[in-house]
Length: 165
Image 1 (cartoon, rainbow, N blue to C red):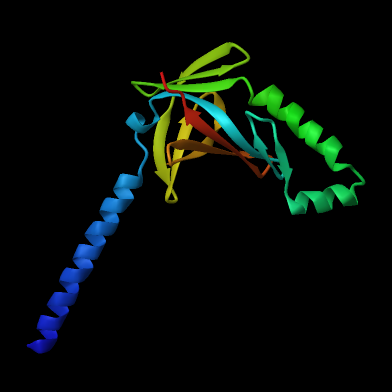
Image 2 (cartoon, rainbow, N blue to C red; image 1 turned 90 degrees about the horizontal axis):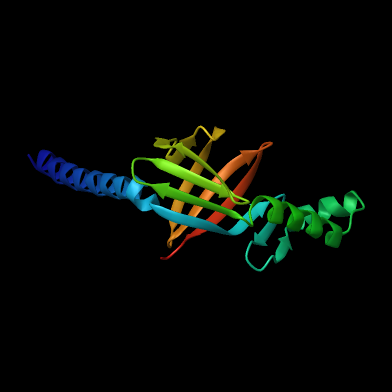
């Protein structure tokens, strides 16, 4: 009887733990409501660099510095290439999530509208949009939206702040 009573107590504890873990897991899912509003990029991780999109400060990773040395390319020239890429692709970008799973993507004053779907895949939140035929991994932490895209097998990470109106 003691073994049965001990196992019953253990089972209750495991059930409570499982319920708590499930609740935490469900609360971590991103919903349409979390995304609503306009978002602008503030930071980019691209080509082994960390870029502040607002101040245009570029930090090059040690691995990339080693690669540049092997290629006999200066860090300053590479930083300029990265800055040009950021200015061209991210500096004028905004993303607006609208009720009804609608998305407005604005770049250089040109707005593209589409719809999106949020899915959970391999414990990650994925957003799908017909604008680009790929899945984006998204997360929200401390009020910042992080979007990760695979670009030629490298991750391109953009971090957005929500515009306050």
